[in-house]
Amino acid sequence: MKMKILDRYLIKQFLQSVLFGLITFTVIFVIIDMMEKLGDFIDQNVDASMIVEYYIVFMPEIIRLMTPVAVLLASLFTAGKMSNLNELTAIKAAGISLYRFMTPFIITSFFISILLVYFGGYIVPMANKHKVYIEQTYLKKGIVYFGSNIYFQDTKNRIVTINLYDVANDQANQVSIQEFDPDDETKITKRYDAFRMKFDTLKNQWTLYNGVEREFGDTTENVRRFAVKEFPGLNFKPEDVIKKQRKPEEMSLEELRNFADEQRRTGNNPIAIEIEYQSRISFAFSCIVVVLFGLPISANKRRGGLALQFGINLLITFIYLVFMKVSQAFGKNGLLDPFLTAWFANFVFLTAAIFNLRYASK
Image (cartoon, rainbow, N blue to C red; front, side, top):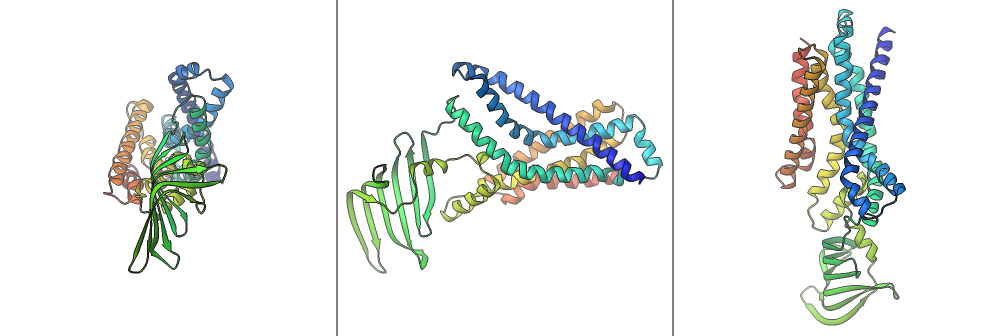
């Protein structure tokens, strides 16, 4: 019963500190960003209501990024405060080990990580979509006028490649359409190469211009040139091409996974997308890692008090972020597996945390 009371007390103090940290970091982040963008808002005559809406949809991304830091500092202040007030000494005198003392923090951090996976994987991308829309519509930023090197699968046996897409004119340049045998997807049956492809809104279909049509038999190849060729069989529209230019931060976890599969099917490199997918999950679980690493440091009295512990934990956070960025750089260059790339920093700091915990418990 006493342990349950203590657990509730620790969890309450911990969650209050996390919430306070998130609110503080979010407010500071918004103020700094608003000061930076104030000139853009004024130049584009953006209404105050739209500015408020912009920062409302910006907050989820800030919360996602700041949650591991808030969790780390919350564990620091909760344990450090108890240590300075000799509450932790009383807990140890009652026969409660450091491992048992850390249990409520770890369990709470685990549930925060689970929530952060969903929050960062689905809620944040939805907010980011609206944020990008506001930036493009009202701040005139990030507008895609040209898309390049676009690959996608139009049907089960058709792949479309667009070298350059002109968004303003709904026109694709240097287009290749490859069709494969439905019974043997490794066997190409037709290929269309065109200098230009434009969407006819009246006929609701695409038209190819100045191209070549190749039809492949078992041992023969028929080549026909054309100036204009209507292609009613294509299943995508201009707006669908634009969607394929979406940024990863606008995609949910499911969309990222599907996009990586699509990139792989079309022969494109999916490594960057796979790293983004795994990083969303690994970043969420960094909450547990930072608690395991930082809590033993905070639980021991040191000269300098909370100020020194605060500095130590900020240094830990900085080193962790450096590890994450370095591993991602190696991963995007193909030197590391996407899973290992995303989780490398967590594995390194988890190992260090275990050694630190064993040392602190002695």
